[in-house]
Image (cartoon, rainbow, N blue to C red):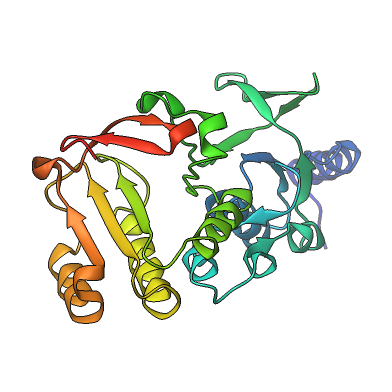
Length: 266
Protein backbone atom coordinates (compact mmCIF):
# COMPACT_ATOMS: atom_id res chain seq x y z
CA UNK A 1 0.00 0.00 0.00
CA UNK A 2 1.42 3.39 -1.04
CA UNK A 3 0.70 6.23 1.43
CA UNK A 4 0.94 9.76 0.02
CA UNK A 5 1.54 12.90 2.10
CA UNK A 6 -2.10 13.97 1.63
CA UNK A 7 -3.33 10.53 2.62
CA UNK A 8 -1.10 10.54 5.68
CA UNK A 9 -2.45 13.89 6.86
CA UNK A 10 -6.05 12.73 6.32
CA UNK A 11 -5.46 9.48 8.18
CA UNK A 12 -3.82 11.34 11.06
CA UNK A 13 -6.74 13.78 11.28
CA UNK A 14 -9.27 10.92 11.28
CA UNK A 15 -7.34 9.11 14.01
CA UNK A 16 -7.19 12.31 16.05
CA UNK A 17 -10.96 12.85 15.72
CA UNK A 18 -11.65 9.27 16.76
CA UNK A 19 -9.44 9.67 19.83
CA UNK A 20 -11.10 12.98 20.71
CA UNK A 21 -14.60 11.48 20.34
CA UNK A 22 -13.65 8.70 22.75
CA UNK A 23 -12.66 11.29 25.36
CA UNK A 24 -15.90 13.35 25.06
CA UNK A 25 -18.54 12.39 27.66
CA UNK A 26 -21.82 10.93 26.42
CA UNK A 27 -24.74 13.38 26.27
CA UNK A 28 -27.14 12.99 29.21
CA UNK A 29 -30.53 11.49 28.37
CA UNK A 30 -33.30 13.94 27.53
CA UNK A 31 -35.51 14.56 30.55
CA UNK A 32 -39.29 14.49 30.20
CA UNK A 33 -41.51 15.48 33.11
CA UNK A 34 -45.17 14.49 33.02
CA UNK A 35 -47.40 16.22 35.59
CA UNK A 36 -50.50 14.19 36.45
CA UNK A 37 -50.87 10.45 36.91
CA UNK A 38 -54.38 9.91 35.58
CA UNK A 39 -55.30 8.32 32.25
CA UNK A 40 -53.57 10.93 30.08
CA UNK A 41 -50.43 11.41 32.13
CA UNK A 42 -49.84 7.75 32.98
CA UNK A 43 -50.33 6.63 29.36
CA UNK A 44 -48.07 9.43 28.09
CA UNK A 45 -45.26 8.48 30.49
CA UNK A 46 -45.66 4.77 29.76
CA UNK A 47 -45.46 5.04 25.98
CA UNK A 48 -42.73 7.68 25.90
CA UNK A 49 -40.54 5.34 27.94
CA UNK A 50 -41.53 2.35 25.83
CA UNK A 51 -40.92 4.09 22.49
CA UNK A 52 -37.56 5.55 23.55
CA UNK A 53 -35.94 3.75 26.51
CA UNK A 54 -33.09 6.30 26.38
CA UNK A 55 -35.41 9.01 27.73
CA UNK A 56 -35.41 9.90 31.41
CA UNK A 57 -39.17 10.05 32.03
CA UNK A 58 -40.49 11.27 35.39
CA UNK A 59 -44.15 11.14 36.34
CA UNK A 60 -45.31 13.55 39.06
CA UNK A 61 -48.55 12.39 40.63
CA UNK A 62 -50.50 12.42 43.86
CA UNK A 63 -49.89 9.50 46.22
CA UNK A 64 -51.53 6.19 45.32
CA UNK A 65 -54.14 4.90 44.98
CA UNK A 66 -55.85 6.49 42.00
CA UNK A 67 -59.55 5.68 41.51
CA UNK A 68 -60.98 5.74 38.02
CA UNK A 69 -64.16 7.64 37.15
CA UNK A 70 -64.83 5.25 34.24
CA UNK A 71 -66.74 2.25 35.62
CA UNK A 72 -67.60 4.14 38.84
CA UNK A 73 -71.25 4.01 37.76
CA UNK A 74 -71.08 0.25 38.25
CA UNK A 75 -70.12 0.85 41.87
CA UNK A 76 -73.21 3.03 42.28
CA UNK A 77 -75.29 0.22 40.82
CA UNK A 78 -73.76 -2.29 43.24
CA UNK A 79 -71.91 -4.21 40.55
CA UNK A 80 -68.32 -3.30 41.53
CA UNK A 81 -66.43 -2.54 44.71
CA UNK A 82 -64.13 0.44 45.25
CA UNK A 83 -61.08 -1.84 45.13
CA UNK A 84 -61.95 -2.68 41.53
CA UNK A 85 -61.62 1.01 40.58
CA UNK A 86 -58.21 1.27 42.26
CA UNK A 87 -55.11 1.87 40.17
CA UNK A 88 -51.48 2.22 41.26
CA UNK A 89 -48.32 3.36 39.49
CA UNK A 90 -46.07 0.43 40.41
CA UNK A 91 -46.07 -0.96 36.87
CA UNK A 92 -44.78 2.35 35.50
CA UNK A 93 -41.87 2.27 37.91
CA UNK A 94 -41.08 -1.29 36.83
CA UNK A 95 -41.14 -0.13 33.20
CA UNK A 96 -38.43 2.46 33.85
CA UNK A 97 -40.50 5.56 34.59
CA UNK A 98 -39.42 7.47 37.70
CA UNK A 99 -42.59 7.98 39.74
CA UNK A 100 -42.46 11.02 42.00
CA UNK A 101 -45.28 11.61 44.47
CA UNK A 102 -46.19 15.21 45.24
CA UNK A 103 -48.34 18.19 44.33
CA UNK A 104 -47.40 20.75 41.68
CA UNK A 105 -48.19 24.29 42.87
CA UNK A 106 -46.50 26.41 40.17
CA UNK A 107 -45.15 25.94 36.65
CA UNK A 108 -42.56 28.01 34.77
CA UNK A 109 -43.18 26.99 31.12
CA UNK A 110 -40.12 28.88 29.83
CA UNK A 111 -37.65 27.31 32.26
CA UNK A 112 -39.65 24.06 32.22
CA UNK A 113 -39.57 24.09 35.99
CA UNK A 114 -42.28 22.75 38.31
CA UNK A 115 -42.49 23.87 41.94
CA UNK A 116 -43.74 21.25 44.41
CA UNK A 117 -45.68 21.72 47.62
CA UNK A 118 -42.78 20.40 49.70
CA UNK A 119 -40.52 23.24 48.56
CA UNK A 120 -38.55 21.22 46.01
CA UNK A 121 -38.62 21.70 42.25
CA UNK A 122 -38.29 19.53 39.14
CA UNK A 123 -36.69 20.68 35.87
CA UNK A 124 -36.96 18.94 32.49
CA UNK A 125 -36.10 19.37 28.82
CA UNK A 126 -39.71 18.71 27.89
CA UNK A 127 -42.78 19.26 30.07
CA UNK A 128 -46.18 17.56 29.69
CA UNK A 129 -49.08 18.93 31.75
CA UNK A 130 -51.94 16.48 32.32
CA UNK A 131 -53.32 17.43 35.75
CA UNK A 132 -56.91 16.50 35.00
CA UNK A 133 -59.94 18.56 36.03
CA UNK A 134 -61.48 19.46 39.36
CA UNK A 135 -64.91 20.65 40.36
CA UNK A 136 -65.36 24.44 40.32
CA UNK A 137 -66.98 24.87 43.74
CA UNK A 138 -67.59 28.59 43.13
CA UNK A 139 -69.85 27.90 40.15
CA UNK A 140 -72.98 27.18 42.21
CA UNK A 141 -73.99 29.39 45.14
CA UNK A 142 -74.15 27.44 48.38
CA UNK A 143 -72.10 24.50 47.12
CA UNK A 144 -68.56 24.01 48.43
CA UNK A 145 -66.29 21.24 49.71
CA UNK A 146 -68.22 21.06 52.99
CA UNK A 147 -71.54 20.79 51.13
CA UNK A 148 -70.10 17.91 49.07
CA UNK A 149 -69.90 15.86 52.27
CA UNK A 150 -73.71 16.10 52.45
CA UNK A 151 -74.67 16.31 48.78
CA UNK A 152 -71.95 14.35 46.96
CA UNK A 153 -71.04 15.41 43.45
CA UNK A 154 -69.08 12.18 42.78
CA UNK A 155 -67.34 13.74 39.78
CA UNK A 156 -64.10 12.46 41.31
CA UNK A 157 -64.03 8.75 42.07
CA UNK A 158 -63.12 7.46 45.49
CA UNK A 159 -64.62 8.81 48.71
CA UNK A 160 -67.36 10.72 46.86
CA UNK A 161 -68.43 7.62 44.94
CA UNK A 162 -68.65 5.60 48.14
CA UNK A 163 -70.65 8.34 49.87
CA UNK A 164 -73.16 8.50 47.03
CA UNK A 165 -73.51 4.71 47.03
CA UNK A 166 -74.21 4.69 50.77
CA UNK A 167 -76.85 7.38 50.35
CA UNK A 168 -78.54 5.33 47.64
CA UNK A 169 -78.54 2.28 49.89
CA UNK A 170 -80.12 4.36 52.68
CA UNK A 171 -82.84 5.72 50.37
CA UNK A 172 -86.33 4.59 51.46
CA UNK A 173 -88.53 2.99 48.86
CA UNK A 174 -90.62 5.87 47.58
CA UNK A 175 -87.80 8.39 48.07
CA UNK A 176 -86.42 10.75 45.42
CA UNK A 177 -82.98 10.94 43.85
CA UNK A 178 -81.96 14.22 42.19
CA UNK A 179 -79.17 14.52 39.64
CA UNK A 180 -78.13 18.04 38.67
CA UNK A 181 -76.50 18.39 35.24
CA UNK A 182 -74.51 21.62 34.74
CA UNK A 183 -74.27 23.66 31.55
CA UNK A 184 -71.47 22.73 29.17
CA UNK A 185 -68.53 22.51 28.88
CA UNK A 186 -67.68 19.65 31.22
CA UNK A 187 -65.78 16.38 30.97
CA UNK A 188 -67.60 13.55 29.16
CA UNK A 189 -70.89 15.09 27.91
CA UNK A 190 -72.87 11.79 28.13
CA UNK A 191 -71.53 11.11 31.65
CA UNK A 192 -74.45 12.41 33.76
CA UNK A 193 -76.97 10.51 31.65
CA UNK A 194 -74.97 7.28 31.81
CA UNK A 195 -74.88 7.69 35.60
CA UNK A 196 -78.62 8.33 35.71
CA UNK A 197 -79.22 5.18 33.68
CA UNK A 198 -77.20 2.96 36.05
CA UNK A 199 -78.81 4.48 39.14
CA UNK A 200 -82.25 3.97 37.58
CA UNK A 201 -81.31 0.35 36.84
CA UNK A 202 -80.52 -0.19 40.53
CA UNK A 203 -83.64 1.66 41.73
CA UNK A 204 -85.82 -0.47 39.48
CA UNK A 205 -84.60 -3.58 41.28
CA UNK A 206 -83.98 -2.35 44.83
CA UNK A 207 -86.34 0.65 45.27
CA UNK A 208 -89.11 0.17 42.68
CA UNK A 209 -91.27 2.98 44.12
CA UNK A 210 -88.44 5.54 44.19
CA UNK A 211 -88.20 8.43 41.71
CA UNK A 212 -85.16 9.72 39.80
CA UNK A 213 -85.24 13.34 38.61
CA UNK A 214 -82.58 14.66 36.21
CA UNK A 215 -82.48 18.45 36.58
CA UNK A 216 -80.65 19.67 33.49
CA UNK A 217 -79.35 23.17 32.80
CA UNK A 218 -79.58 22.40 29.07
CA UNK A 219 -82.44 21.73 26.69
CA UNK A 220 -80.47 19.24 24.63
CA UNK A 221 -77.70 16.75 25.43
CA UNK A 222 -75.41 14.20 23.79
CA UNK A 223 -77.20 11.11 22.41
CA UNK A 224 -80.48 12.50 23.72
CA UNK A 225 -82.82 10.49 21.49
CA UNK A 226 -81.15 7.18 22.39
CA UNK A 227 -81.14 7.87 26.11
CA UNK A 228 -84.75 9.01 26.28
CA UNK A 229 -85.95 6.07 24.20
CA UNK A 230 -84.15 3.65 26.53
CA UNK A 231 -85.39 5.41 29.67
CA UNK A 232 -88.98 5.24 28.53
CA UNK A 233 -88.72 1.58 27.59
CA UNK A 234 -86.90 0.47 30.75
CA UNK A 235 -87.99 2.82 33.54
CA UNK A 236 -91.16 4.59 32.42
CA UNK A 237 -92.26 7.25 34.91
CA UNK A 238 -89.63 6.27 37.46
CA UNK A 239 -87.09 8.45 35.64
CA UNK A 240 -87.91 12.02 34.60
CA UNK A 241 -85.71 14.47 32.71
CA UNK A 242 -86.38 18.19 33.32
CA UNK A 243 -84.73 20.50 30.74
CA UNK A 244 -83.45 23.97 31.52
CA UNK A 245 -86.35 25.71 29.78
CA UNK A 246 -88.75 23.89 32.13
CA UNK A 247 -86.82 24.95 35.25
CA UNK A 248 -84.19 22.22 35.38
CA UNK A 249 -81.27 24.56 36.03
CA UNK A 250 -80.16 24.64 39.68
CA UNK A 251 -79.72 28.21 40.95
CA UNK A 252 -78.42 27.59 44.47
CA UNK A 253 -78.03 24.91 47.12
CA UNK A 254 -78.80 24.65 50.83
CA UNK A 255 -76.78 21.65 51.90
CA UNK A 256 -77.88 21.68 55.55
CA UNK A 257 -81.52 21.12 54.55
CA UNK A 258 -80.64 19.08 51.44
CA UNK A 259 -82.53 21.60 49.29
CA UNK A 260 -81.89 22.49 45.66
CA UNK A 261 -83.41 25.69 44.30
CA UNK A 262 -84.28 25.28 40.63
CA UNK A 263 -86.19 27.36 38.13
CA UNK A 264 -89.49 25.74 39.06
CA UNK A 265 -88.87 26.09 42.80
CA UNK A 266 -88.15 22.46 43.75
